Image (tube, rainbow, N blue to C red; front, side, top):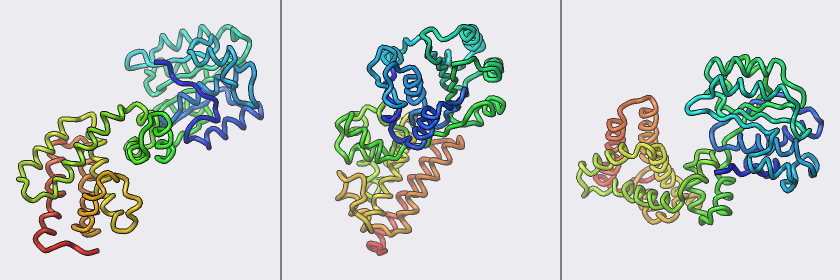
Length: 343
């Protein structure tokens, strides 16, 4: 599927980055080599394409691309001869890809504008490929700009980093992600807000989610989280829940995030109920908020966070989830034995 390309000013959530690039273009001081770092889905590759479009636009609006001329349409379609995108071949960017690039750079830009080389996922370069790229960066051709994208500077050779102007992309604010989800996917604001929080600052991740499937999964998950407080359910049911979470490895991180958000909502309900995120479960959240004290709710959030950290450190996920379930249940049993807790 072709990547959407938009003008620089339309990039979501990266006003600081766009300001830097716009000033470079306006002052005709765009660096020959740029390094875009940040998590997946925050706009690194989209911005690189938008910059390539702006450099080659036939009818620019200020320093931004018109998006309508033949050059802009070629960039958007991925077939502009002077915009070359290098992606990993399999798991890595290989030496042959960089050698091919060096041969291409012996010639002047085909359409007479400025050439843009975009090397995506630079952290996947093998040592030979990285050293070959370094030679290009040491003697960059005229009218050529190179953008390397990677999660962090530490993922690349220090010598490559030192020859690039580094621009860091930050996680996108949930409110901005939610606004895009409402506009592009037609989600209601509450669902968009919840999904935007789970996206962890990545607009790409939020947009890639199947909203209908995700909402069904979320509803089932929260119903099971709510059932933890039901003392009539046997302890074995908790372990069944832990097993189900452990099996769904692809969504385990999201599930733990949702569990933390559930108890966060109960905490917010005590002080600022209008900030509850899972508003379709407001009745259940209000009951939980009345049942448990602030300290107990913080302990529940800490239990989910501890499981998250343990799994990140490669502790057996089933064991970490079993421990979490017992910690989540313990406060409920104590409160039911002594009456509702007060703040």
